[in-house]
Length: 562
Image (cartoon, rainbow, N blue to C red; front, side, top):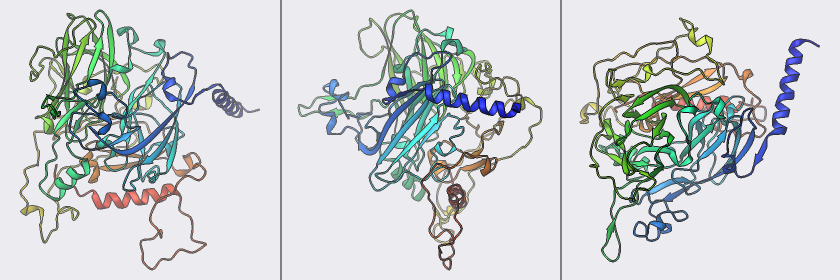
């Protein structure tokens, strides 16, 4: 028997053994457990029902005058503003997925959205290997899930770290289809494990900008009229203080803010995730405390102590908070920058033993000091650029030597700007050309180069490109498939700031699952003279989807203004 055949048989044996040995959890919440090494794989089942819902609905009863009602079944108070939202299982943010290294997830998504909208779920940060059809990008790796239909996602969640899931059809994630996806590992596998005592679910922090109306309304007003593209507020774990409520007795009260609880003398790992949808960098700080950054986008970094950090849409930062201050309450500040510079939100860090009340410091104080990932600011001793972080070699994935070679195999230059062009979707060159429409949304600044480094460069899946600057991204193309590379500002990707990276050939892909949904135009050709016949050659689902994406990019890529 050849050595190559022996290796193949061994791999097949290990695959079968792993599948047989995996524990099946019908309720995926039971997969949240102490992680072991060697890992004990599990298959974790989750059921997601996506639907159109409403904040401050009748399910909230007497919230916020009776705070217990704010936590009642199906109550989504948000910041007190009643508006249409999209939810998964009537939760906001959606259900947390917390699993261990080596686990796989099955997520049955049932679409109960109104207006016959299709939907899909993307697993941001997960390397979808050998499950390319499960990436969840509508019209690229799958058709949108039709109204009142379901789709079963099945994939191994790799690599470990802080990730998240979100809707990837239209602007669904902007209105509430998103949640945390945490992949933990055994302590012996965690490079920074000795730096903290607790890694708790309640210290997951999802932050994002928020609109007072459903996103498509604001998008339409912005692109077809003179509507604003600025958010009205910020939410922390779906909570905030914006619209005061009045009851029948004339009493007034605000909805509750988020609270993070700690005990003096212990160190806590916080996992922050940004679901920002507009040009909304968020500056996070905690009064009287510093933060020890230990990870970004799921990848471990050398620890860096900071007073604040800036997080952009799609990014994640893990930090350690040392609860070493006087027993009291402290503000957790999430301050908007750029297009969000007029909004902020606060949460409360409450020490065990402290009487629950608002902290004493002003709500409007802006934390100064050492800041990681600053917004459009050159690197200094106090402004640490993201490229200055150093990676810690991952035990699971040793440094890929191909990434360290001086010259890559291929180079691609992708340039963009918000130029004045008459995109026919938003401006008509004869009747209302852009030159005659008053706009002041063009942003230009002096170019600031980023430091280029090959050794110990951090692994990122989301990065901000500085205004007037550039970012160099290097990756080893080892995962065949069709992958969407796009801006994570929702208004930008919706008008075409995206492209497809094609790795390998169709022959490199796994077999298309049996009866996998197909989508595309009918008839296949856009020519009105073409008629389908029984012997019309069949087009693969992938080809149909890519053709559709190409058409969409041609239609929308003429961007107009920020």
